[in-house]
Structure formats: C-alpha cells, structure tokens
Length: 235
Image 1 (cartoon, rainbow, N blue to C red):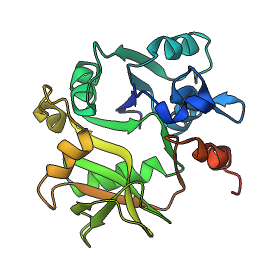
Image 2 (cartoon, one colour):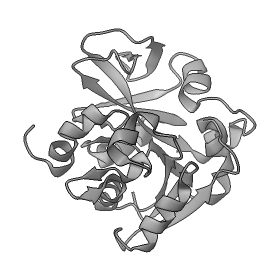
Image 3 (cartoon, rainbow, N blue to C red):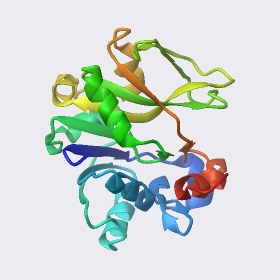
Image 4 (tube, helix red, strand yellow):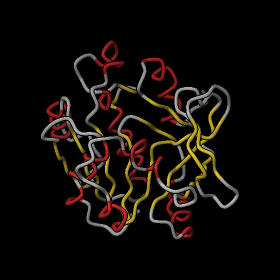
C-alpha cells in the first residue's frame, strides 16, 4: 500500500456513542487504553500505508488536538481537512479529492474495523480491472447493515435491504481509481454508498469477500468486543 493514499471519513456526529465517549468524537473512543483512531492508523501503517487524509467535521478540534499529542505511527503522513459544513459522504470525498494524489485510493470509515488482509484486497482489486471495489465480510446477523449479493465472478449484483440472519455485508472499505473519483459529482450531498455505489449498474462494482472479524463503533455495545478484535485476542 505504499503507492495508495487512504482517505478516512471522521466527521460523523456519533450521537449513539455519547454515553461512552462523552464529548469526544467516536473515532477517539477509548479501546484498550488508547483512542480507536490510533489503532486504526497503526493497522494501515502495518500494511505499508504512508499517507492518510482525514476528512473531519463535528468536533474536528478534538481530533487535531489528539494528533498534536503525537500518538500516531511516525511513518504516516496524516493530512487533515475540515468540512466547511456538514457534507454527505459523496460530497466529503469530492471535497478532499485534491489531496488524494495516487492512481488508486483507499476510502474507509473512521469508526469501523475489520482484521482483514488489505494486501489481498489490493491484489484482488487490481486483478479485477474494475474502477471501484468494495471489501465485504460475512457476519452472523446482517440486520444492521444490509446485504451484498455477490456473483460467482466476484461482481456485485445488488445491495439488499436490511434483513436478519447470516449474510455478506459491505465493510465500508473501498478502492477507487483516480478516474472513478474524477467522475464523482462533487455537488452530491448524499451518501457515497446509497446514492452512488448502490446505483451502479450490476456487475460494475468488484467485491472482495474477506474472512475477517468486523466491528462497527456506531453503538456502545460494540465496545464490548472491540479490544479483542483489534488486539487479535479471542472473543
């Protein structure tokens, strides 16, 4: 990943986490005695990432203050951009487009984590020849997330509304070509997933289904297992 810039969405309101993280954004929620964002940046650095662009919004000053403390991997160049106003994820990606310099860009949420092999995801994306790839994972209950129907050719056939039961979900990690990013409508204030990816023609979006554990820090309950997943310990 030395030749891939990483863009992290880190501007959400985090209303469901206020009882746990207080006034801090959920990216700074404490996991095993350290801010979650620190663990996430270490994870990226371990796969060779060198440059990360943080798209900040709500409580951005908390994140910049945390970065100033130096609790990050020193091999990473971390760039911060603050939304001028609350933007949808599609517009937020367009807002930081000028800071993404590489031919392939990884885009991911700043409040989810999965212990997937990112090198395998990159290799799968490059072999596919697709302009856009999504990292997927199978979970016991897809009710919170919605399902991804993946064909035998590893192409996304459709996204399915949230239904209970075991299923393959979108893990919120993407690889986009520079050409794909340049085609995005930067005026779109909607969701990158719902209003862009979900509307792509069947078979155009590549899917890499990883065998990995997945957590979403969107709820306090997820913190109960976060340390074990991030630390690699048994749950």
